[in-house]
Length: 313
Image (cartoon, rainbow, N blue to C red):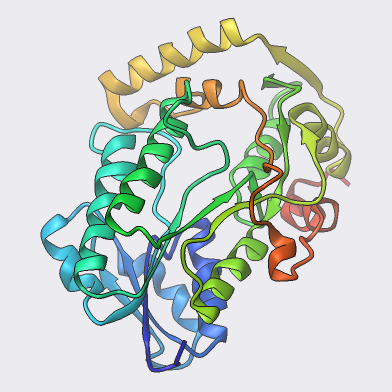
């Protein structure tokens, strides 16, 4: 791709999005980042030269303005996602309707490449509403933009991640760590490695790629928590929460969030519980990091940096 061409990124200030923007900037590309609050995304500008990264206030759900956002783009990347619903933001609206409209407008505007970030385990057959919406979103995007690239990462880790930071924080205030699905398997993947693959897709102009990205090592949920506790030198009881009990707890939490809104924290949702009922590992026949000649960074190398502020010693 020529440095004069425009790449438009939706969700560019999020956990994965910021790394994608940085990787694209290193290619010298002009990047247009659509964010709800540009003032909270000013840090992105330091990733590029003066004028290289343009911040535009907007929302992927604003159907009438999408055309304005993507006009003149050679590539559009959708990094927008949520792990829980709110009164004003449902899985289906964000992951399906908004993604479909974005892909449809991108195709109409002559965008040559569309990259949609989904998640490993996404399927319209999933029992999890979250993963079901992700699967429906993939289908909706491909319906409107048949040559789109679909990227499905496993559990993403990095300095700003919610997984390890959340459990590390919990370990500092609780004598036990509740775990739903302790034997569920993951292939944790480093956030910048995922961003590199996305950047390489843009650089090479590849289309119609279906990528499942996971690290070289597979861990159970329990093993991830043990690894975390060992790193921050804390001894905590890992308390297994049976799925039957977790579903009741999560459904109760979802109910009160529906009634009271965001004042109730989304500490456990029914969609998350159902996602944990199935392993989150890469399929044998999918494209992987090796196809891009990238050696995924190992969790044990990055974890000390992620949780250093929680280290007891």
